[in-house]
Amino acid sequence: MNGIQKGNESPFQSERNGYCRNRATASGKAKLSMHEVGIMQSALDMAQEKTRAAGGTKIHRILLRVGTLSGVVPDALRFAYEGLRGETLACDANLEIEEIPVKCWCQICELEFSPGQAPFECPRCHETSGQLRQGNELELTSLEIS
Ligand SMILES: [Zn+2]
Image (cartoon, rainbow, N blue to C red; front, top):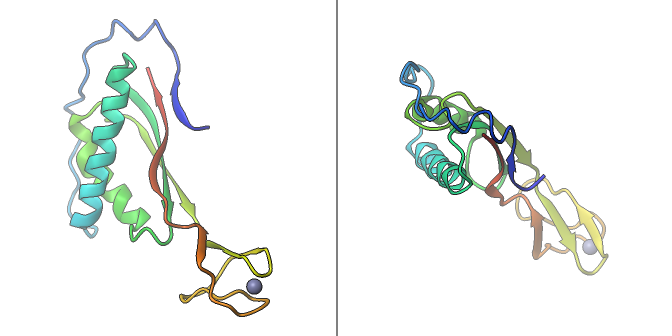
C-alpha cells in the first residue's frame, strides 16, 4: 500500500510530452484556502519529485492521508488540487484523500478509543489520554505513475 507503485513500465516511457496545458484552472467559486493550497503545492512537488526520481513522466493516482487533527480540510485540499494540477505531471491524476479519525490510547486501561472533542478522555477511567495514536496524519501515502 505504501510507497510508489510503478505500473505500465515500458509502453509509456517514450511518451515524454509531459505537461497537459488544456486544463481549466479553478473557477474561484468554492472557497480557496491558502493553507490548503500551500500543502497541496508541497504534496504535488513531492509527488513529481518521486515520479521523476523513479523515471516516470505521468502521475495517475495520488493518495493522501489526512488526519482529522491535521488542521487540513479535505474539500479545500481537493479544490486546491484542481487549481494546481494543470501544469504538473499530475494533470490527469485522481486525487484520493483518506480521512483518518482520531484514536487515542489509554495506558491505564490499555484501551484504544475514539474520542469526541478535546480534551480526549478515556471512556473507562476518564483519565485524559496522553497518547494520540492517529489523527495527526498529513502525508503522501501512495502514487501510481508511469
Ligand atoms: Zn482509561
